[in-house]
Amino acid sequence: MNTPITKKEESIKKSPERLEGQIGTAKLVFMVVAAAAPLTVIGGNVSIAILNGNGPGAPIGFLIAMLVMLFFSIGFATMTPYVKEPGAFYAYIRKSLGKRLGLSSAYIALVTYTSIQVGMYAFGGGSITNYFETNFGISLPWWIFSFILVAIVGFFGYRKVELSAKVLSIVLILEMSVVIILDLIIFASGGKEGITSDPISASNLFTGTISVAILFALTGFLGFESTAIYRDETRNPDRVIPRATYIAVFLIGLFYAITTWAFVVGWGPSLVVDKVAENPDGFLIATAAEYAGIIFADIVNLLLLISIFACVLSFHNIITRYQHALALEGDFPKKFSFVHERHRSPSFSSLVQTVTAVIILVPFSLTNIDPLVNIFGSMAGVATIGNMILLFLTSLSVLIFFRSNQDIISSRFKTNIAPITAMTLIFICMGLALANFQLITGLSVTISYILACIPALVFVTGFVMATYTPNRKIGE
Image (spheres, rainbow, N blue to C red):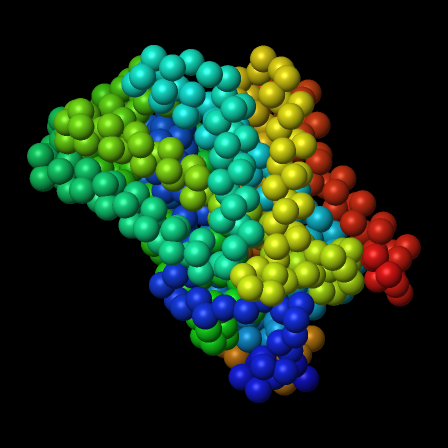
């Protein structure tokens, strides 16, 4: 029988290769929500959800996405006390479905987060380039800023996780503060056509292309499961991880839905689509300037750039800890399990991830493709499919785990109904993602679907590797 880990067992498992920390619920929530990059999502995903989705009904897409993530989180949190190892999706899937599927899922996770991280580096480089050109007349190649961003993220990622937590907490508070202020100003003014509840009405389930709104809303939750990947660095993980997971889901979902509703009210349900169409990339800044003035809009613009940094730092930390967890289980070279003596961080894993990001960015920097549209779009596409596969497999793991351990007393809703519902909803969302995949990447149909196949190919590769190396550890 599997039982929750006790404090005594936790202390026994500590070793020179184990990460250490005292992250509490608040800091863990900040780190997770920072990965969701609120300003980046509002500046990008919200515009697309309104323009190409169901128009003024876009807030419903974010509420539906929150519902999907909530059903997933119920099973995920219920199984948390029985998963003693860090590694998030990988640890859950390995425990329930075995090493082969566990290793396959780990490789998908690495590709998923490396893809979105590289995409965000390109997005950040392009955004900073545009910022300097617009405000200072300085024109430099986007990749210069991307590599500077890689270096800064590498510096923080190499050090103790509490440093990242503090930085991300400050950035997130600033991000959310300016958006909340903007939302309040819009609602207080009454908007262009008055305050209306129509954008959050259930009637919008059947208007426009709701699938696109849901799809881009779901990408705003990428990385929220990282609550579990910080297990060894969390104080009382069996309590903190489930609590932080629920808070993060509600916070992300409601924040996006309310803000999207505010923006629709700001420009008016009948005019908002046309306003977004004028300049989708500048919709957030235009809204800030309209309701709070140019200076406030400049502050929002600067925080948008900082938001990108917070996002890639969060993804960097997630990737390094996935690699560290794989090394502890013998599925990655042992060097990746090295923990810095002073920083108590996966320092070698962090260095490797920094170098990996540089290697992937170099070929892109030698081309003339657009960093904001083509690079970010293609990388986000790969990450979207990979993340949905991981969500589905993790929900399946929860279901099988509790059915295989029926002596564990727990709510049937949490152990059966919730994961089955999550699997069903995630499967539907995956179908929507594939049906609209070209919209995500901004590339040709052929290239788009080649990219969509990458997570599946990685999954097969991991399964084959685990099949033919079942009894030995990598690196030994």
